Length: 231
Image (cartoon, rainbow, N blue to C red):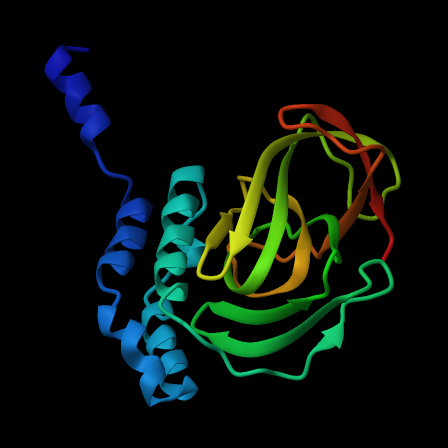
């Protein structure tokens, strides 16, 4: 292949990336000011932006990153949310409460309130992308990737994962994960607790939700053993 042809090959844009970035470019900056008119208008602005997002078209790593960044760009413009009825997540995560705000285009928004020192153990949601936006307090996030094949969510067989991220979420901060990146994660609230919301999108088939237990805590970059929990 000649040099010019090689350059042309690398210059070809991925259509799905362009679709996601086009959605990002059309987001309305005035949504950041909409809170003055009330929570409903803020969510209407988000719904208008989210309606342009196409998670079913974002199936490869680059397209999924472009998609989740587009969703984050819409989400950070929401500076307050209505408070839904919050319910405990479960006995495996005491001190964590959630409530569903609603569905907006292809996205669902879920609000979290986490007591000081409480959190969710390592878990994943296959084929979903998630944008997490901080509302108050702070939380420490750990992110992991599989280090080899993983068994079905119904299995108790051990498998290997690698810790790839140690991050902090603060008010106004944003964290993201995509189906093929950082989809295994855990969080623990700081001394003042934390409130945040998730923007969740399904890219392909819903395969359920999986909690897991690490055999021991891992350092950044370290590979360790885990197994799925039946919850």
